[in-house]
Structures are given as C-alpha cells and as structure tokens.
Length: 313
Figure 1 (spheres, rainbow, N blue to C red):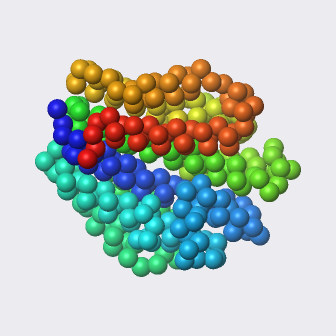
Figure 2: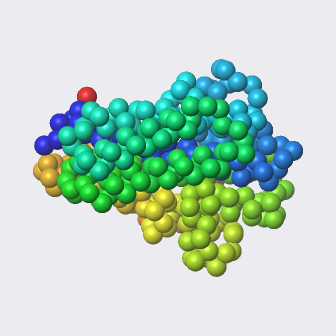
C-alpha cells in the first residue's frame, strides 16, 4: 500500500501541473474575450480573476484591470499561489518528494518544464508576447503529461495522479464556463447575438475543443450545445462528465487494490450519476451559474475527502 505522504505528493504534483496549464488557458480566455470588447476589457479581466478565485489576492496589490497587469499576476506573481510560476514550483517540489515513484522520463520532463518556464517568466510579459508564452506553458505541461502517460505503470501511483489531474481539470472547465456567465451579466441583450456566439467560440478554443465541437455540432454555436458539450459529453476529455468518469474509475481501481471503499467513492459516484442523468435543459432551468457554483463547491469537497480517506499527511 502506498504511504499517505507519497499519495499526497503524487496527487498534488499532478494537480499543480494541471493548474499551471489551466491558468494559461484562463488567461487565454480573458485575452480573447477582452479583444471582442476593447471598450470594456477591464470587465472581462475582472471576471477572469473572479472565476479563478484570486480576485481578493489581486486587489490587495493592484487596482488596474488591464491585460498586462492581470496576465502577469496570473502567470508570474509568486504572491499568487495559483499563478503558473507558483504552480510549477509546487509541482516540482512534490515531484522531488516522490522522485522514486516516478520514471526517469517523467521526472526529467517536470524538471525541464520548470527550468524553461522559470526562465521565460523571470521578466514581465508584454502584451504582444502573451500568446507565445501561453502556448509555451501549454506545450511544456503537455510534454509532462505525455511522458507520464507513456512510461508509468498503471498502479496506485498512476491512479492518485489521475485523480489529482481530473479533479483539477473539472474545476478549471467549470471556472472557464463561469467566465462566460460573468461576461454576459452586464448586457443580457447580447445573448444570441454575433458577439455572444464569438464568445462561446472563444470558450471552446480555450479548452482546445473548437474543432471537435464543430465535428459534433456542425459548427452550430448555440449556448445549450456548448454547455452540453463541456459539461455532459463523456467523449470530450475536458468535460465535467469525462473527468468524473475517470475519477470514479481510478477510485474503483484503488478500492480493488486496497480491498476497501471510502466516503470519497460515494461522493464521486453520486456526482457522476448526476452528470450522467442530467440534461442541458435541466442545467439551464436551474441556472448555469448556480449549477457551476454548486459543482465547484462539491468538487472541492471531493478533493478534501480523498485527502482525508487516504490519509494525506
């Protein structure tokens, strides 16, 4: 049986690697949404900070919601524990702690990504350079994921890593969708307009889902279709339903390996059952923001329960 301390290191290593990539995706969302409304770009960046859950931290040191200030805070501010640079630092620290549980390829990919991003984020990022930096963050984290998926034995080490990755990814997809809610709050009249459709396309692009969405829906950018795809479609690797299918599978493998089930198994299964039985009409009737707010809360509680059940200390 894997020691709780080692399971904790693997779980959080992968949560923070995923968080680094997800923060880059959230910045990408804000950048693209801000470009659609140059006159109110500060509103879009404020919504990104709110959805990322770091607006209070940002406002302690900053008052300007411009592209450069917000993006640098989310990418390279060490005072922000969820920034890309902070996340990679924490991921590498956890990787060092569980070094003997990782293949050489996985450890080297983590270390090389940390070195590359540390060099890149050492200096303030100017707005014209932002797209290239975001692409680099996504590329480096993808290389880590590729090394891990391609070389690691499918045992409890793999399962704890997967659970961490997918809990973090589900949190991110729900937050990116919530950005859309905050952006549309000031102007309900935009719903269904060409601007509204462009913003939904931006959300899809930010989770690398625009092309696969077009294959599925023939490019019909309806809010209900986008929400259905990113929440309920179990084929889409960043959807909430896909993430919870993977979480439940890894938890089941752990139950089989350890010969026992825990409260976290029931929490995950209940949430997955709700996602499998829900329709997008149900979600919109409840309210997209209300649904996402509840999901983010429950997803956080699942993470806490996993830590408690497997003694992450």
